[in-house]
Length: 319
Image 1 (cartoon, rainbow, N blue to C red):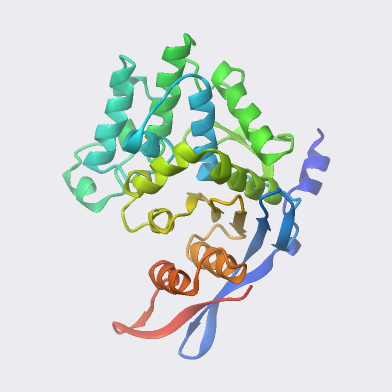
Image 2: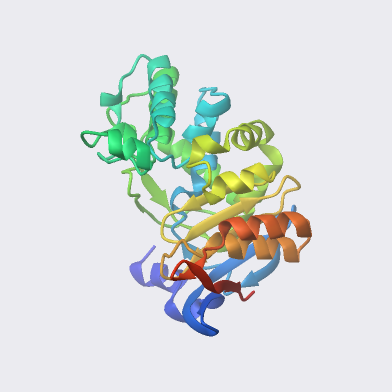
């Protein structure tokens, strides 16, 4: 596919709609523009804000789908280990222990990881850390699962991130199956793994299909929300509410309901501040969560606007 064709399919500045705005002292201070698409259990688009057929980088929002590929390769993880392999953890001692557990089960150590060196994002772990380590990187759980799956399948591990590696080809197959579309472009994600573009509706469709069909993985995520991030992160809060949710870098957010509804959001400037609140509003609008749950989640995921320690504004969802 030519570069001109890809640019025509990708989101452009004029595609984005106003999703939320932040007020302070009764006036709007900031705006969050982006696109969002909600699909039904049959995969069809129910409502969209901005074009749904533009392609985006889903980033870590597809980690649960990568976990499906790992399972199809023959690796059966359970509980918190399965959750951390699908998550973007914060490098806490508990997270690192799970990463080491996955690697150890395959006879590997952390030196096999090819994700970048990093400091923990968890504050307690960051204080205790004396150097950057690969197991602190938020994608190290996924990388550990990749490596363990390769060992179990008899595949090479030194090139497990190469696009032509059997595991990476299997991941593409899973993405295309769940999204109901072909991957049109591939680059490199921040962790070093191949990153495949999907349409906004394809990402929503894939997330809904995952939540509907991959009940064992979904159950592990819901039971161990702490393992995919920090305990108070939006993903964990959504999982506690019975939804499958995953954040991706640069303002990407997906939510899947057990009945197969799927939601994908991409905030134009990559800001993470508004996406979970927008997701809650869309889910509530379509009666996918009750009013009480919506109010509780909104209060937890919406940022406070403070002035001198007091509330002086709020985030207003505009969908």
